[in-house]
Length: 239
Image (cartoon, rainbow, N blue to C red; front, side, top):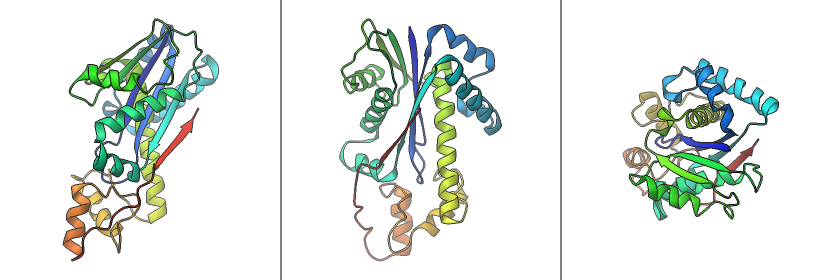
């Protein structure tokens, strides 16, 4: 039996990517996550998250554990907001992350998703419909609210997603030359960064469809917000 946990980081920020992570380990190894102190990434310090990430990577080599990361860039997020909504986008990203795992066709798989949809079963159904050929007999997929708090396998995915999102934020800061804070609209440092990142057109790392960008653009320009040249905007990192 293979346990797969899936979670995301960065759904709400106005700057940077949305990151989705899938983690796959044998069911018999789930207890190791509990023993080492894996829990929801929001309940851990940055230092502890990094320690757990390093520990997990060592076990990928030693025990054959796997994970995959999907970096969904702002242009794809904007495209989804305009056409189908973030919940549908997340089902696509969750399925993509599963599809990039290297699982044997004869494996029995139990997939647990952290559901963003109010209808947990609908979220599971939509994700399952996008998994390539569903090759695993007697396998299941379930989605729950707060799965990152209640299922260690999803907690591990939340840690890796959060660390990848934080690394992406640091890369953006190095590129633009000033701090952007958490990326959330409630963060004053982020709002200051957004003001700097709006010039003749908003920076590519801004989510143009967010009300924060629209508001600040309107405060500083008399013209309408430019139309974004929307592309897929997805980057995939495989492990």
